[in-house]
Amino acid sequence: MGEFESSPMGRVTVYSIQGCPHCVQAKATLGRLGVPVCDVDVGRHPELRARVKELTGRSTVPQIFFNNIHVGGNDDLQKLAPEELQRLVNLVKEEPLPADAPPLPEENQSEDSTAGETDGEFKCERDELADLVEDFKHGTVIGSHRRGLTLYKKSFSGDQLVDWLHKEKGMARAEACNTGQALLQKKYMVSVRGCGQQDGSFGEGKDTMDTLYRLLEHDPHSALNAGQTAACSPIQAAELSLLLRELILKLFSEHLSADGKSVDYKGMSVNPAFERYSELAIQLQRVELLSLSREEKLAFFINIYNALVIHGYLRLGAPTNMWQRYRFFNYVSYLIGGEVFTLQDIENGVLRGNRKGVAQLLKPFSKKDPRLQVALPDAEPLIHFALNCGAKGCPPIKTYTPQDIDSQLRIAAEAFLENDDGCMVDSGKGEVRLSQIFKWYKADFGGTDEKLLKWVVEHMGDSPKKTSLQGVLSAGKTKVSFLPYDWSSNSSH
Image (cartoon, helix red, strand yellow):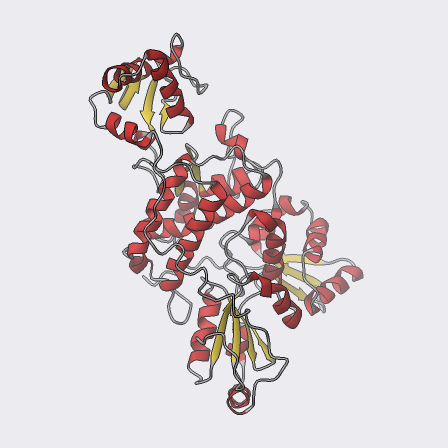
């Protein structure tokens, strides 16, 4: 695609984002036309989003212009009659670029200015306790210990840890106890559930001396980022989630097919960049969650959820039936801040304020579950349009930041509702057809059809569809139905 430079000749301008299959398909079609194409990534140039919305009336990408003529999105491009498409191609080839052509980024804001930030091998400042943990791991203390009738493998008692620190590291017992407390607080080790003190304290003269512990990497679970110690000094949660999401999006984009319809997950899994991603994901193990604000939690967990879905596809394959989907979302997980979070835990436990999900009999977190401290106080309905959206047009954003998370989520909802797989209005029948998402999570949108429709109107951008919907609602007796949901996999294997 073309560089950003002034030219008297015509051009096709495409506003897109990284990792958008519909953008890839549109650019592949345009690339075969023999016309100059300028691809503007509005994810890297957010200053242009408002202007593109002003010019097009839409919140989705791609948005395509032949000189100053707005064609629309990918669907609109594919539906153009051959003679109309040829007319637009001739316009670009034969007419100079008009003064009111759509804008490009400023010259000092290069498209490549942020590219490559996550390309290199991940480097970090090593935590002060990491070497001590590595020495302890290769000592003779960790082993099997019995409590009652149960044998706990790869465990050690608090007393054994203190003795090892005293003998091998020359620490006084008071200093050794303080080190044990630091290892607990920094999530290097965890107490074995059901084996003594569980309040997070560690010290001489307490029950903790007989409590069994494990190194976090030895605690048995299926998290995709487990099995290795996170040795870096803790990274800020918001920064880490952005790095992970950017890297997985770049990988995803590199393995999208030319038509944007399928992803080569097998090729993606052997890409060296995926190993770098996996190393970075390990650092989630000890990230600090309890101090996050509402906005920071939203951005962090949305980014991590979307990255974890792709990571799950790479490790386990995309689910192909209802049972596999249920298992996938209840099994695929990351170890975050010392606790395991599945996809269901993130969506329903954290982002929906600990509400029961689809086909769930219980809330994700019990009253005693430490993860409940991380959950939002209330469900945030806007998250449903940011979590791994598969609509025909994408919101012009793929990674979320705490600074303006609410406006980013509103943009995502507006983009989703612009699509016919999000909302369709039949004025003649007085019927509104909505995505199954609104049926599954109706409680998040008010709980009744009336409140649901009111929410939809309030979150639509100004468009003919919104006008039609308002007309149907004002006529009364609106029928609400729900569109079939496309569960098909985008894997090329």
